[in-house]
Length: 254
Image 1 (tube, rainbow, N blue to C red):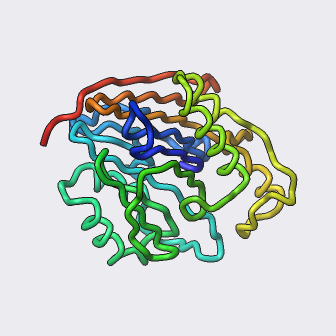
Image 2 (image 1 turned 60 degrees about the horizontal axis):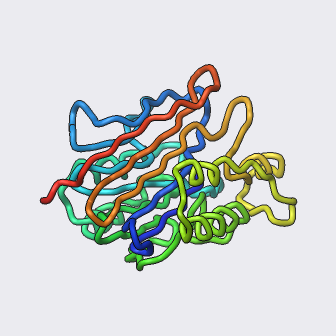
């Protein structure tokens, strides 16, 4: 995932609202979101190259999502897949904060990342860049390929749109429209992450589009106060068509 907005305990109907784009090389194989055959309680897409996932939820209410931290001087050639940070949380029963403590103890084995894990009752954030575990208070948040709520242009723009929208009666298409924004800001608003200027421009929009790399998944997750989960996903198929995939289920009481 490369642009994510989420609301935590900040809405009269939904305890959790998540919208996010996954940006990736278009030839990297992946599977659309579904309940896993190996673990039927887990709903997520799957990275078929490494086996992990970028975001997911379980029938018991465990939530996890990850983004890469774009800092190329710090990138290691040999490292564990960051997609397992999420999938291993989703398949475990370890409390969220304790899980992040375990991850922190071996964080040097991964390239830079941001990881958020939790439930509709508690969310926790950890990045191996700043190496601090933080509880997330009720509110509206945005994250891309820097630390949580770093004011990149696209994060700020998406966050403002998200905030204004969820204070109204909104539709799923309204949420997807935030993720569809292709504006490339002026160079003065671009972050400096160690990539060439042309690449920085390409990566600066909420929806990224190029022949080889770009937004390939759009995900929306809502959890209402009665424990009903609404999961929507659009994925880009090999014919460059967007395919909608959706699920609705009640959280299990554990």
